[in-house]
Image 1 (tube, one colour):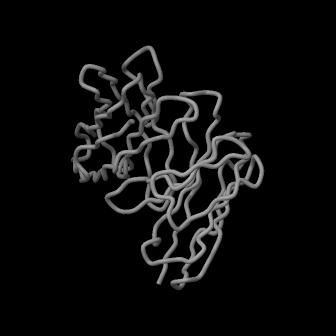
Image 2 (cartoon, chains in turn red, purple):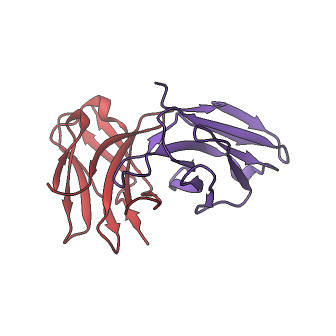
Length: 113
Length: 114
């Protein structure tokens, strides 16, 4: 079975500072990993995903994430936070067709001007 | 291309009332999902349909039923609503044949049960 742990339900950063949102997963087979963003009163939209190959994945809005198999991690980063990055972020894992997606409990990002 | 649509956007029910949440997708996806989102608990899978004609229970199926009406539509029914079902409900869809393809989400239905 798979699971996802997001450390820190709330993260605050100053505008222009580094954003680091943590995600650790558990999977007995090679996983596919995703980061989604949810703006207030909206659905989830994909930020980026790791499938195979290059372990550093770039997504929309300047976000990127690195798959580290040895650490079972898929942390999300952005070099410089913008006010528009304030949202809830979810990490998710799946292992392939017919298998469920497992979501973390989410991290709420606040950007301080 | 509307993607995933959900109706209604908001609903208030009294305990014991029933209702059906509707979901439709126009992306020709095989798989569809119903989640509920509660503060601090992330998204929890209620039911899913891997392909037309099949449905399976997820993590929190009690108190819900689903119908995969056709390839496009997947509805969620609350037969006798309870306050514990107050939540935001999201429908999602995915192309089953591509294992690493992401799920696409609708805008959600905000349900309050009094």
